[in-house]
Image (tube, rainbow, N blue to C red):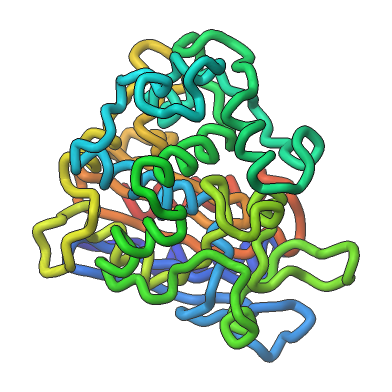
Length: 347
């Protein structure tokens, strides 16, 4: 198996020069491990002598949805604790007789549940976590479930609450016990991070109140509002932990420890689950834009600049971690880099 390493390095170096991101960490490989990897740029442009490193800690942002929610829901499904197609109100008293009562976990995982498109938690419910939870679980859907595919953070927040209800654990405890600890992902955790680990973080967005960039505190307002732990965002991770996670997805029978989810959950998730609705979705994963040379590539991104890809057909995976949010919320420059990176990794 060969990878276009020189072209990947040139692409990511150009992204640093063009200020798409201060720095990047990347790797591509298969079930055996990493076949090519690299680091470019700096941790923080204000400290140009501090280079980006392979063990740099990144705000995972929406990768939390995969690392914590998708994996935990998969563990519960594999344990036959959760029927994805059962209406939530038939087994979850908190939503019985409320609009979510007819919604299913499958619809939440495919973004077809019709729940509100934006979280807007503080504006709607204030700052008390229990009031926020009740508000999220009792709010009206904005369209009939199953009618359309509409990406929304609210789906992951609800699924995180569902996982807590079914397991009797908080989401951070469940993810750590069933997935992260089992796989040896020792550097993956929810924030806020202790100072000694926060110092290893790639800084993200500028905090207007302190005039400093966030390090070790999630950029996502919902995660911050809920104390750092929620289904939307809030996890921090490193390259090597994501490599372990993706290798396990491709082959749970490897020497890696057995996580809570397994091959059935991965195979079920990495197939189109939205019928004729567009855009096509799996379960929290979605098909990557493809070229004629690519096959069966699935992706999930984080708003801070993180991303991971997996192809069961090619038995390949790829990870690209950046802190593009240091510079801008504009998605397009990094989108262009991501698309080219994927093509070089999978074609």
